[in-house]
Image 1 (cartoon, rainbow, N blue to C red):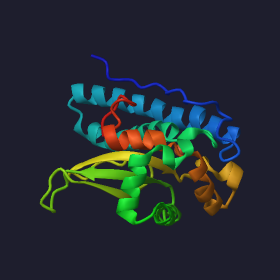
Image 2 (image 1 turned 60 degrees about the vertical axis):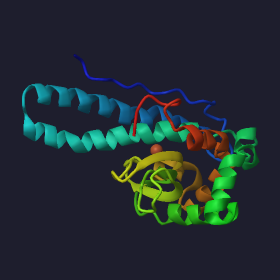
Image 3 (image 1 turned 90 degrees about the horizontal axis):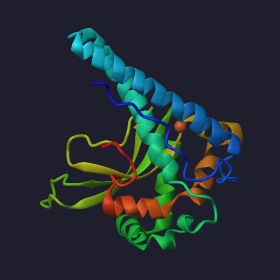
Image 4 (image 1 turned 120 degrees about the vertical axis):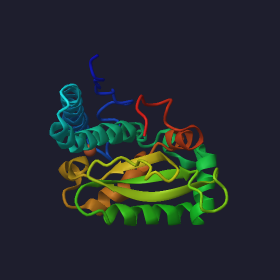
Length: 223
Ligand SMILES: [Fe+2]
């Protein structure tokens, strides 16, 4: 039995579709080079893992854990990221077209403006490479309601995906890539500029779909 292999998912829009917020050059390199490299390395690590398993090679299995985590996370995160972006000016970038998500955000943070400001602070607070996420946690318990859902803003380091810590389930609503490869060719050291502009290309429709129905309809992996 061969191990699973993954392929680069196509972007749901053209490489220049997110301009002027994200340049065609960044999108092309980010998708064709960076994302592809995570997939290539993930497939290699999974194949090596299969070989090591068959050979009962425990040290090899242990050494492969980090490669699988890093490159698997890179594949998951970018697959989610492309889909939670949309061309500026498109209906999907209007939060009013995702009323249930807008209501949930307002209920949680008091206003959309407060939410966006807190999200920006989280993004700018990431040290080194990482991601910022809006997630919904469910079944976390502790409040007497195992089914309760709670929106949270979180960051993850390097390519760690927004997975559950084992206490309830986590669904990523949308993510923002804060690796320098996501913005530096265009924004240079103006990280705050990227963090302000990115809101013009958030696909609130996809975000709401994830809130209401999870990610299983979009992607083939599980978190
Ligand atoms: Fe990236």
